[in-house]
Amino acid sequence: SQLLFKCPIPEDWRDKVKLGDTVINDYSTLYVDIIPIRTPPRYTPPREFFQPKYRNSKMTLENLFLPDDEWGKDHILPKIDHSGRWENIPICMPSLMTHGLLPKGSDIRSHSLPDHTDNHVAFPPDETPSVIHEVIACTWASTTFKTRSNRAQVGDGKRRLKEWLEFNLLSGFNHIYVYDNSGAFTNRDSLADVIDLFPPEQVTRIDWPCKICSNRDGNEGERSSQYAAESSCRMRFGAHARWLGSFDTDEYLVPMGKFGSMSEVAADLDRRRVRVAVFPSSPAKPRFDLIDDPEKTKQPDGTFIPTVKDDETFLHTYNCNWEQFPRTKTLTHRSKQMYRADYVKLHYVHYATVTVVSQMNEKETKDAGERWTHRYKESHMLEFDEENEATMLHSKSKVATKMRSWKERCTQTVLEESHCNVGFPFPKDYKDGQSKNRSDGWAYNCFLNDKIESYWWPKLVDAIKKREEITASLQ
Image (cartoon, rainbow, N blue to C red; front, side, top):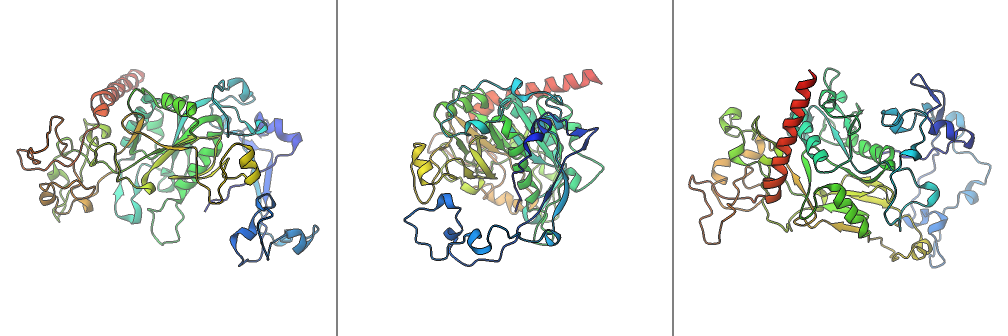
């Protein structure tokens, strides 16, 4: 779990903190203590814990908990000497100054973009932050990591990140924040050398050596560090962006149809008063003809590790979805979202868990022109039309344990995610009734995204080549 809290800075200090003046020579001169308030456990129905604003006359609550009635107004819980307080937590400069995106002492309002959007359900006016980016992406990455339940170790973090950054900048993200978790495993390497290939006004590295905390011993595949990084990015940098999404480096956000960038997609969502947009997801298959010879990574049990060739891209190699558009067999717990940063107040990987509207009581909801229901359902959410708006290609690495009996399975025509974990795409001119096996015996089992194949992949290859030329010229 994460501890998120608001720290009300005294009014006399606000301008100094806003301009970064309380940090001198990288040392803070202003600190805060956190004192936890411990209360006895309660075993009554959850709605009896509601704040007063959420209660109404229709509720019959026999055991309503009212702190003033229980303890009075002069009772301190707990006594300060026994509080277990966290002392002397430094107040940093605003995040954009800390990471060099704005100079210390500058007024962020002078850098704000004009707001041409409909803020029907956004911040109240006195809370509106200054927006300097239309669309940003956050990622939590490392030079190496373990898959969930420690099934395998994956060490292609640098190669993945380099291509992923290139593509997302190409596809219209204005800025990308990389939470580099490499320091949780080693102090000898990081992702800095990859990030330094890109302009600092486009990509920012946040050193994030936070270790994974799991109550299941040894299960480094759990992702508590990632969850905290997502909240950090939303609060620190999402406050200065119109749209935000947190994605993994194997997830490619692809504008489709008439759209040429994710900024155009976001602007269209604003016009339609969408606040949360969902990318359906299902892992794609690496195309057999574009990966290394299986003999190179063959394991003693006959399996192998599908490996993208050195002269290929992940985007191209994994352009092979096992289900045609429109996909219907994607799972909610795999989907990802991009959302209005001024609307979503708390986000958890795949879900917008708290929004501006979900925090409202019945009167506030109706006054805002929203539909009130006792069981909240998000009404400003849209699932992307994958053929005409945007799609996500999930290029999830395939490990050796997924390749058992692959030679037998991959000759069988079965359109399922895990039946054969390498891809053999149907030809564009394939017609019903034709053989579903190639001339070499392998069975067709996936479908190409033509816009990736004919438009985005060539653009990515060209962008990578130009980046390499720029890098070589600077050496």
